[in-house]
Length: 615
Image (cartoon, rainbow, N blue to C red; front, side, top):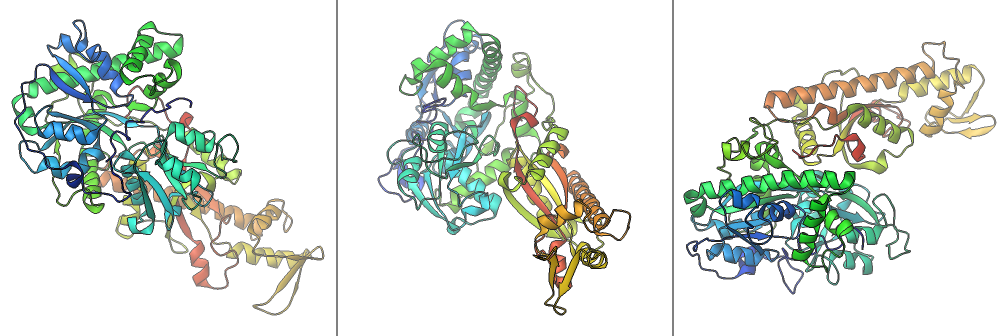
């Protein structure tokens, strides 16, 4: 299998809650009784690692599994021993027993264990550093799932306990769907037998599954393909959403026991500074490798293959390199944004912590809420700023979206009638006939939802689609059409039939009406009250309404001191193109057409500015 072949084969498999049943379990019941003990002598300091590209920075900084004399960690006076941590439950047991003061996992995995580690004040979890965001996890669906909202009523397969559970939680949150609205099939393994991909493959009643890249490619064929049943693909299977788009869903973090970090904050600070320096070096070497080759980068890939084994990383150029390419390092700027930016309310520490603990309680992983503690590290201290090349003194917001590129892409989707195919979720607000302002008092819930979408789906755009009612256009079309002899009408009011060129003519065929109006079949464009001019005026009005809504959202975010990127939000004038009711017969029906639709749109990576660190 290409690229990340078992890239996370252990990342989740390993992190899975091993069970012989398909029922989800409380984490405490799964882990069993474990006595809390004081942290044992830590020379060397035991640091767990998992199967993930973010660990490349740790391996490089340490020089291997044991700290090497000329390594970054050695230069900081540290002595580390890196130990396998793919069995997350065993990680937690070792953490409680004092064998290692550090946990390594995704934030949602830590949240699932929050009750277990939070019962004793000594082991309460302090989240002291973010490593990466995931860009290589996927949800694959059949033809009956095109949008996230289509999950309702479906049967979905997901690996028990791993990071994909959090991804599913985020998707249901996005669609405002409760867990009870779908049937979850809990699978024990990440890949292979008893995995979501295999269940999806053999059981046609399963509408979707959460998978890693190799399984996604085997089911679909390619990122933009639809499975046709050949070459091992599943007919009609498609990639619905991935963490390349839902880019703020899976955060990889380090957690430390509170009793240890309280006494050894300098050691923890040096360790994480060393990790971040390793990340800078990996990024630099990766650039050299992609530009023409790098012996040091190849040596790092070889180290990763030696550590993980050839069964996990069969090749260096494809699998080991692909493992690194599948994650987005956040660096010191990203940690400043995650821990210290009060405007980062959705995907900063407080928002992610609340989200993770909500999931743990609501989905039965924990019975009581035990908060995780935010990092006490000072990312502006000399330990970081003297060692690292890329640092910031205050949290900043990177401008990521190329507005003109995003706008052009959405407009192309609209012109080619594939905008709906690239839409992940949509919802609407209604407005009055002559309304041109949109107050936060009336639309607060929708404005908050847009802020949430732009934050969590960091590499998607939100199109604000303005729609107008076609009633005036239809009235003018009939009037001028009959006057010029183009249309013939028979019947009585309420049951009229129309004919054009001797053939039945439907006023509900909106796309055909637009085509004829654009060709000026009913007027020559000189009549101000003609259908062509009215349709053009309606389109312009819909654009203005979209702009007014965007302006209102940005003003609302500014007043709340909430982070939002203006270029991620694109107003789109739709006009009469997509009516809810093509031929309204009364004012109530006409009002349903007057709306602004918010659509979360998948866009290409070319529309997002590249940067070394993702924050």
